[in-house]
Image (cartoon, rainbow, N blue to C red; front, top):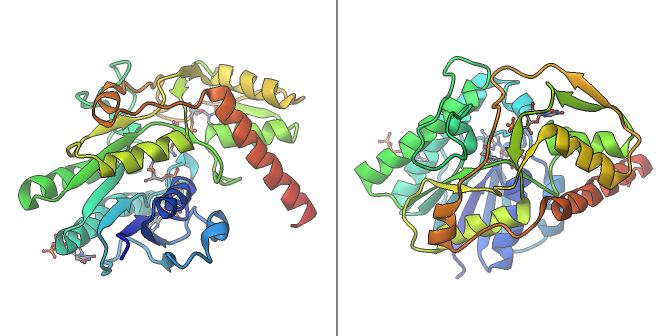
Length: 317
Ligand code: NAD
Ligand code: UDP
Ligand code: UDP
């Protein structure tokens, strides 16, 4: 029998890409999702696969299934969605982690946690390496996500020390690509949709803040490798170190799409990190992994995806 893998948040952007890759690797995949930000539309091409199942379930409630590996991805990742119901966001990270760790303990499964560069907050160390403890605001509007994810890391490491669980904690930096939702609200999907529809590009602040964007295929390879190789519990940074200002990103997307869109400046959201770039030396050393997709190539693929999505919405197909 194939090994059984549970993917929580499997109908979301990263989760759906992960489910597809795991099936290709020969695993049986159980996707658990409450469809808060995810959609069955992301899974249409694998719904008929006999080795794939979907269960509608909220991981803040206990879950009893028998599996060999768990990828815990459930949690809204876009600021507009995680700030819409902040209490539920913290519950998903904290109660969700407790339930998934309890499940992993009972069935002796290896368990992966989708942590985030947000655990570093608005970082004072640049680029960010795993030893850095971070600079987060515990009472700000991003805290439900940042502190929820930090507490989830605490729980993972306490189950590791106290119950000897096989944990894998990945700190994921900004990732983009096909299967992002039209209404996701994160910068790359916003700018691409705005550019393709010749609408104003919403630049928050002056656009001098930086991010480092990783294409989804590179990220998913790293997830699977981290789970498969004997690499220890982490935490490990996963991302693409190519750093860019948000203004440069808007110019690049306008350029590639040939859009007539003009920039419109909006206020910078509270606690928006000024700079972010991963140090991925650890991933390079222990996973022998580094991203191979340039920002230009990844953006072209993502633009192609959103262009097709916009056309299908227009024609109703
Ligand atoms: P996403 O919003 O597209 O996917 C999250 C999925 O989790 C959705 O399908 C949603 O319906 C589901 N979900 C939310 N709450 C749930 C609950 N209580 N029970 C069951 N399902 C629930 O986001 P994404 O970009 O795919 O992110 C996936 C994971 O990776 C998240 O944990 C996120 O924090 C982490 N992450 C993502 C990025 C990134 O750039 N994409 C960066 C850092 C960390
Ligand atoms: N849990 C779960 N599925 C399982 C086993 C446990 O959802 O297969 C949940 C259970 O509801 C519990 C949590 O995981 O609240 C933590 O489990 P653990 O065994 O670590 O702690 P305890 O049950 O002693 O609180
Ligand atoms: N951003 C922007 N316009 C948008 C959406 C986001 O200028 O329409 C900025 C945002 O202020 C932040 C950066 O782009 O500085 C990345 O935002 P995103 O929400 O994608 O992710 P995060 O802030 O969590 O890294």
